[in-house]
Image (cartoon, rainbow, N blue to C red; front, side, top):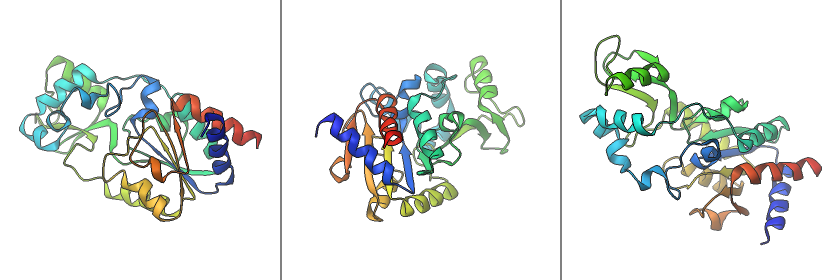
Length: 250
């Protein structure tokens, strides 16, 4: 299918939608300067995620995670046109929510009102010993002084960001809400996800099995491409605004 025809078909799907849901991954934030994980040049092509970002290894030695964070965590990112396009689609009444694998908070920063964070948020850090919570920026500052950082309240060394590490379950309320949205969706718009990480990747499949059409926007092929009504390969920040323009015209 030619690119122009695929764009038009994507716009038609969203124009007809009354309860679309977006499912986003690291690819939507790449154009904001944040690295992907499994895509070309992604972090997990350079590091073993089960060594630097698993709960088992974290409990053995939190300095491995915090050393990785010190070298590779990026802050100060702003939403890009792909995030903004989802906000505009929500404002038309067609998009009912954003389910994201990302922990960067850029959907909220862009103005999306219904955001479900399947993998938690990197904005906060909690102590596994005393359960005290702190803003991530405060603990990042401590980490730069001494790695790993110690809990200011109890002195414990198990300060963990409020993100889901490998080996941890997804937050039950977020996963249940995501399943409910997916089950009632008429279009599932997948943006910037490799669709390889479960159980999160089961959400678009649930939507499809419940009758939704799949629309996938991703830089690289995904395992779900053969199930999708429309697949658009490229940068989300370029593709989504073009699709939205067609929706507005139609």
